[in-house]
Image 1 (cartoon, helix red, strand yellow):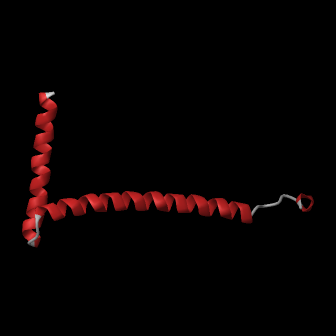
Image 2 (cartoon, rainbow, N blue to C red):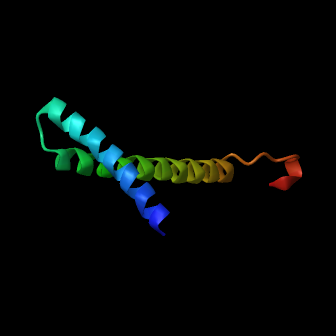
Image 3 (spheres, rainbow, N blue to C red):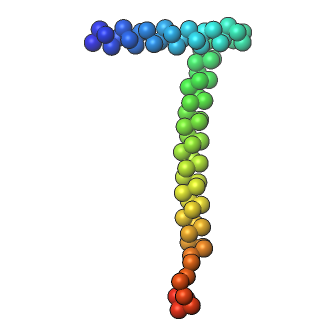
Amino acid sequence: MNILYSALLYFQKRGYYVCQRIADRLGIRAKVVRISFMYLTFVTVGFGFALYLFFAFWMRIKDLIYTKRSSVFDL
């Protein structure tokens, strides 16, 4: 369990340092940068899923409207 915590601490230190450097460069607080990254992550994942659902719905509607009939007797 100690190995897990030491690995977690290592990645947290490095990740927070990146956010701190970006915040120092922009002249804002590091907390704002971290929260912005979290919100951006949720927005991009949600946008991709919404786009997938939109295309699935669109293809279903297209198939319902434009059905190919093999002969005249399928009316």
